Length: 81
Image (cartoon, rainbow, N blue to C red; front, side, top):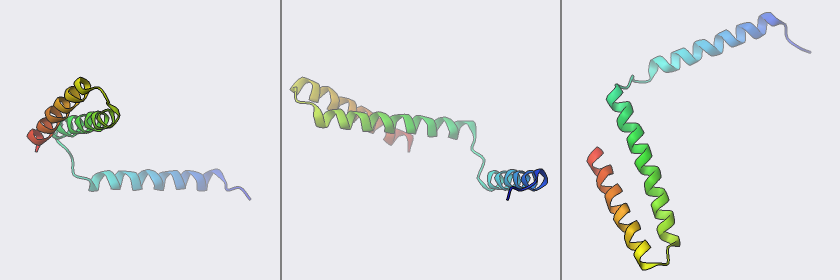
C-alpha cells in the first residue's frame, strides 16, 4: 500500500536534517586544505597510472622515462606531507 504525500515529505525532511547534522560534525576544511587534498589526489592518480604503465613497458627508454616520472611524483607527494 502506498504512503501519502505527508509521510513522504516528513521522510525527506528527516533525511535532509540528518545530512545537515552529518555536515556539521565533519571538520570544516580551509581552502588551502581543500587545494592540498585535491593536489594529493591528482598526484596519487598520476602515480597509479605511471606504475601501471611501468609494469607494461618493455622499451628501456620508456621504462627510464616512467621511472623518472615516478620519482618526481614520489618527491611531490613527500613534499605535501
